[in-house]
Image (cartoon, rainbow, N blue to C red; front, side, top):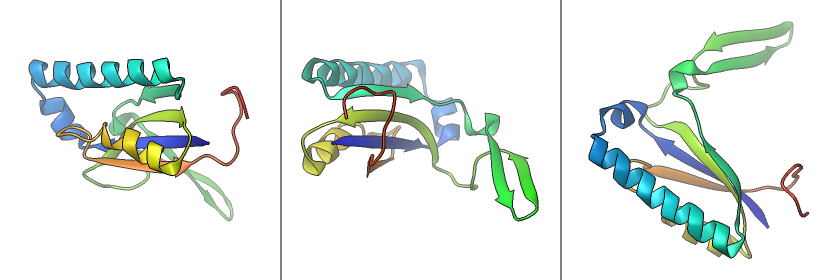
Length: 121
């Protein structure tokens, strides 16, 4: 089963991180990427640009409205994602727990019911 693992962090806290803290975060993610690649569970993933670089489009009955910035104002914003393919919801949550730290303060695990471009079914 495929799962989308959404990572949330405080962009201001990310910008304030020291070089050492950034290196620690990158090392942890690199190790997780390698472990999931070795197990065949990692399909893809990406870090996302700063929320201030976001454009939000909303449908209104009479057309589309756009706004600069994220969908909602919040301290924690979506900053990265993985798409994983693993055996169970428990395994997906186990993987997600490895992401949480002082930087990624919330992780959402959501089953993917319809996929394309990721191989397999």
